[in-house]
Length: 245
Image (cartoon, rainbow, N blue to C red; front, side, top):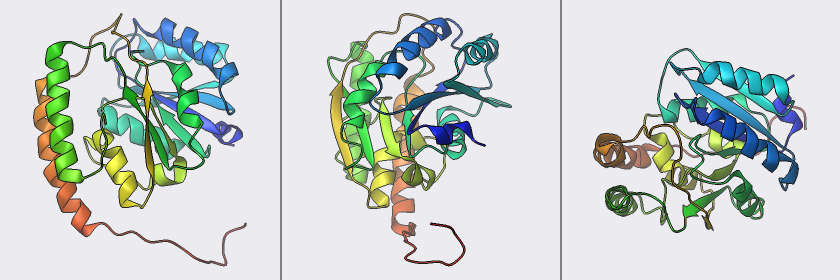
């Protein structure tokens, strides 16, 4: 049995060389789970870490019955880790947060308040605690993405999101997918809501983002999205005779 089916929400936490953040993740998530609006578990996706992240994650999972992990054989990037987690879970809802704790797990409750009425509820980083250069890069990238996708999303880079799992599974997989989740949900005629959430400076570990994967690569991906949008096939099944109700 897939144990995530016993919960309503699975929070996916991709991890790549975050050994300095693992203890804090355990502490913050352990406090959040009993306070969650719905029954919630955590799925760490170790994305081929070369430090002690995997060993520490395994230790956490031995200590907590609501913590699980998935280990990828090699580093595939954030989109690959997210997709692997989405494909693995069987809870009705799937959430996502970064391992750097620049967003608060408790703010998932703000998103869960609206998840029954929207296929994706996502955070907007209020009072963002990043450098001016990072903010400028994000502003440029978000503006160009909105122009190309017309998704109307203010802050697609915010790593706090909750989705209906059946919609998340139908998202086409490609590198950089995580930046286009709202637009990809909208391709399925899904509804998206944005909610302000808290943002904090990174206190441990090293950011995996730089000019190329924060600015240049997203520009290129926008053209790939436009190509895919014209050819996207959207369908719904009205009836069948081989699945149980």
